[in-house]
Image (tube, rainbow, N blue to C red; front, side, top):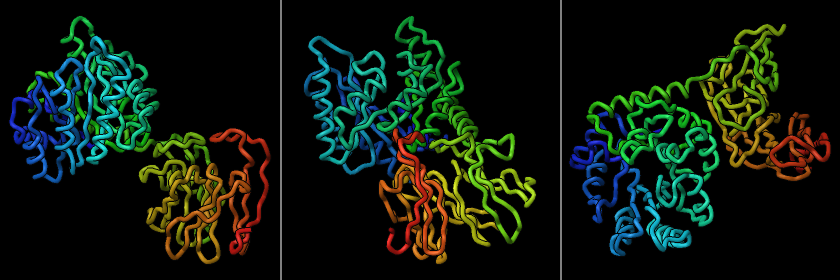
Length: 455
């Protein structure tokens, strides 16, 4: 996850060039810039100019505050900002300010629809920015409006300080999970677990600190993002931080890197087996390979799955032969040749060089829902079952590109596969009574499918 920074916390007193130079010096990948302040629009040109001079730095977003009591000229400034963002990979974050007399939810929806529609004509993405004390305070509130409008260029952001101030600190994992399909941006800051609501300054100071200060465990946010396979950047909120940027910027980056390292560190299993799924025999070495789902049956992409190698008597040769360091999620079905082991995982099939104990290829299965088992034809073509998808993929030996070979309700949740000459034997789980579960309304069958006719 890339890390970016607001142009606050002492940076706002520097020129755009000096801000960018300082952030790059301390290992930051980009920044977000305030688009308007005190009824005036920010001159974004110098930010873009200096950012464009460096391939390792970008302006991820600019944020515009829409205050309902501002003049129409000021409130409509978002159009000017969007015009400046056209042709750039920079998003517009929009904050709707404090409620005023005459404000209605319908008004905010209308304004946001106008912003999003105009931005779409300029190919600009918009993120709704929840902000404590304002009309939309939390990510879950933002999610309701974002999903209602349901525009392709509209998503939302989650900010740790505003969630904690709104009482969501203890359930931040649940919040992130609830909004994950619309989540495009996340920002974090050091924070105390208990917010000091004495006044506006104490609220700010207790929820926006360098990452190495505060009693709240901010790393839990990063852990949840990793569990959700979040691909976006993470911003650090530094509003009103009074420490020297040359001090808090590198120390915050160091803490962030440490958290990521700990989160991404492969878990070490306490035993050779954890939810073993399948055994496959390797004749040349007279050994067996055992796939371990790790933690039970799960669709999570948790990098906690591995292959154990045992001898012919069942003695463990290598408890974690391969998988943890390589990021396997839940290896299940396998098939083998003298030289290679093919292993099903959540998103496709790993090809492993047995002698060198190395993954040499990965064959993704597009739109696969629950990749489960694999079998090999005599010509080297691979056939892969998608349990929840009611489909069989084929990975031709010539192209090595997965394609849907057969999709039919008659497969009745295809589970195990076995190749019998020119017939693919499919063991079906049964008709699922509840999608996404293992409960059935009808027991499965054993199907024999001709490779040529698919019948």
